[in-house]
Length: 130
Image 1 (cartoon, helix red, strand yellow):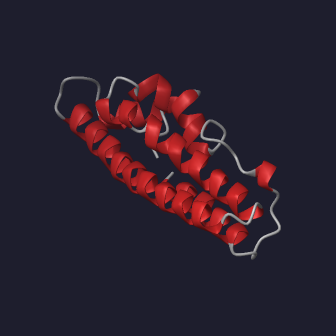
Image 2: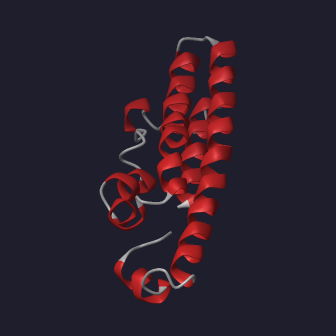
């Protein structure tokens, strides 16, 4: 999912710099990207929603999408300073998302190797982790 996250951001930059013709309305929001589907509808919600790190990722993940799309909207309106500020905010949120994805991975490993629940191997066959 980290790679998907980076690819989504790269599409924002490609569009921002005029290297992509991708329509603004085709950029997914935070619930429709792969991470969002995993978080809201998929194995993430079902299997890992009890983890603090899992809960903490929602706001910065939403901000990545909101600020990225906002930057493109500002760029279309020739509000360059606002666009760059939104890109900066997107990057700040993105750093948090990547840090939290690593924390989720660590929490999963720690939880399922500490003997407090089923083994990670059994659990990972039931749920997509990353």
